[in-house]
Image (cartoon, rainbow, N blue to C red; front, side, top):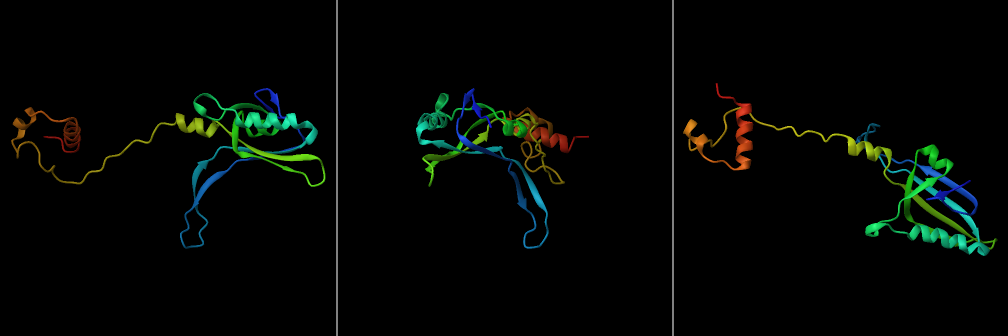
Length: 181
């Protein structure tokens, strides 16, 4: 299995990569046995990487730590272009380190058992969500006449009065909902 981050190969023995797509949902059953859920979107895909690095290859361990600790402008975690068969199958192109890096010594071999997580950055669902038009705001109104008005019912003379921006918006809404006939 090959794992490249910005063209730099992550080396290790017995490398295993587990891909994960989390789908958020909320239970809508309340106190009943209903199975209805509310879909809340897709969370970024993650790749859990586990591998073994022999003690004699400490340079490989330092490489992983250097990649994990790298930052881009503004102190943000560095984003990497990834080359890996599992990542390609899941449609993951760019990742960054997430949830830390752990290494423990093996009980029988002179090696570290290393685990880390790579989280997808700029995922397709995220891009679609950013392109999607925002939901329009619908205004609510009640039947009847507007309260207040211009100078206690002065009618046309009240329109000559200068209105603030908010009052102009309210006047347009009032005129739209109750046009003068």
